[in-house]
Amino acid sequence: MYTPILPRPLVRVYPEVDATLFAESAESMQQLMQEASIILKKLSDSKQFASEVMGAAQQGNKEKVSQLLISTGVHSGVEVDFNPDGINLNMTSEVEGKDCCHLTITLRWG
Image (cartoon, rainbow, N blue to C red; front, side, top):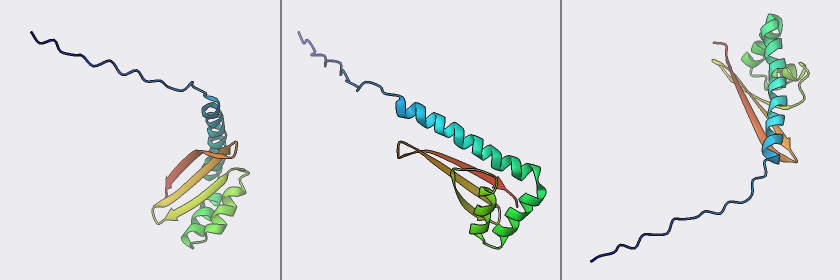
């Protein structure tokens, strides 16, 4: 009579969970989102400001677009990219010197 040998179940050993960086990243992301809200509010509340941003982008003046966005009072780094269809704002932050959070906003204008 054949008696099959059943394999032993694989027992995985995981390191203990330390959610400190994860929680700090979530907090940092909340700050990024607040700063993103500042930019979005300014763009939606002021057609003049929105026109200035679009005009600078249309001229290919990335530095001017960045200056305008920073003038809203945001403190996080904002990397700007645009094309004839719209603008991309990439916001990043760090926790304990580590790149932790990225927030990308894409707005269409054409």
